[in-house]
Image (cartoon, rainbow, N blue to C red; front, side, top):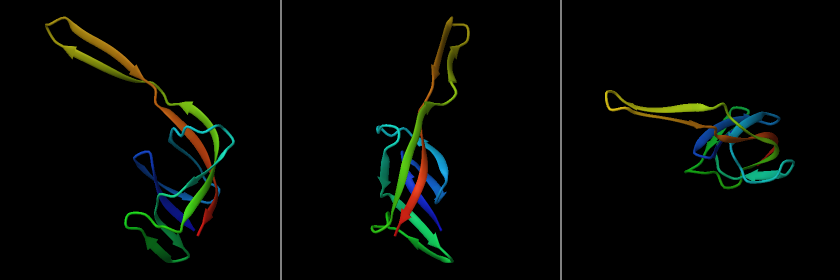
Length: 103
């Protein structure tokens, strides 16, 4: 069985027991979270789709860690005008483990 859910502006396809990286969730490490934004689930060969979400399906996940991605560089430059700007950004993320899928 696998489930497609929506979190942080992105969609994720997961099975029970998967460990994935999603956008940062403001909860402490070790707590269980319930995700209700389920777009689709498939069990055996039967798939159900939500409009936009499925009401009676949810995911229980455990927060493993919070961390930051690698730095990306943003460079602004205008030639012959002596204009140069260097910026960097490191995006926060949360690593979660899917414990159970509730139907």
